[in-house]
Length: 474
Ligand code: NAD
Image (cartoon, protein in one colour):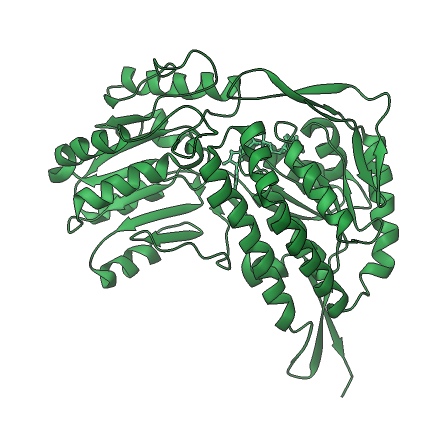
């Protein structure tokens, strides 16, 4: 059991005495694996005051100072990589191989990429007769979800530190243990007192206090569209910058010229990554009608290769969903799709028969799904893939765009000229054609109700910068 009865404020782990506590429940065993102290608006005030004070000197730190600090952070992160992976598996149930090779390796790649950007970034430049000074935004309130508990924090905290901002972080109350190890890494790396602060707690209390705080200059949030709207409203009175990475329900369009075996297999396994709890999960597989029945056979075979169960076993590829609420919701969505006329190809609601506890959902394939069904419209966040038949690429693009979300889309197509044309018509923040290798420096974010702004790479770095235009210097 991990007892997180401390917050990290002004360079110290301070005892959060007298606060209410909350159990951290393992989605694998449904048993508590820890407790956290739940912060209050007063804790946010203390953390914000420390961050505001530290901003005076940290915003004027040199590139070299920040580079050496980030290199120390990377070094310590590497030393504790296995501990981060183990804690991720413990608190959110990611299979250990996925925790190591995707969640933690991805976090490391983001730290390294931010160092690369900071090494060459032009903080001062010219535009015609004006000098442009790129300056840190100020005190940043960072609010993160549980699905990639370390990576989501890294993609916000590291560029904020690199640009000279100071931070108040609120991790998800469902996965707060690995974030506390991250606070230890920053502490041991010598991040100056007050530059980074962490307060645990729930959204409506701590998150809301951060969003509306007059002394926080920017809120960067990743999570559900519902919470994103609440945060934007709470932030409105103080006119702060609000950066949002929200939900998705991504389409995976298979063009008629695809290799159906490869495209469907990769598509199904891609949808099950992280238990389907990835905001870019390719949950809607759009299949040419004439290939639909063949795709169903391949999809069933692919789903049945998934290894569900012991998350500490390297061979396991599917863990549980995060909590009882998600478990009920995903199962209800599967049942609703079947009631609406979808064909259940494999899986279905309820726990796999080999398991008698944990929030495990069977890897599920639904076929003959229509664009109006709930599974095609709502974000699922579970191991469910829906095959939607289409007639003609025009219709596929229309279906792909026919959702309030606009985070990602996938395209399987041999003809790259056609693929580029189709990509230009998809209203999403990223299009992945034929499963390219992951690029840590690619900007990440959504169109429409999937959010605004970008994380990662140089655009994500600039999200934490203000532009000051100075005239008259020549
Ligand atoms: P959530 O929105 O419930 O919670 C996310 C964070 O926001 C948590 O820290 C929570 O405490 C906080 N929060 C909740 N209500 C709040 C409020 N009113 N004010 C301030 N803070 C509040 O989301 P979740 O269940 O943790 O994560 C799953 C969601 O996150 C999914 O919808 C998923 O698509 C989305 N997500 C998006 C991205 C992306 O980059 N676009 C990445 C991962 C997850």
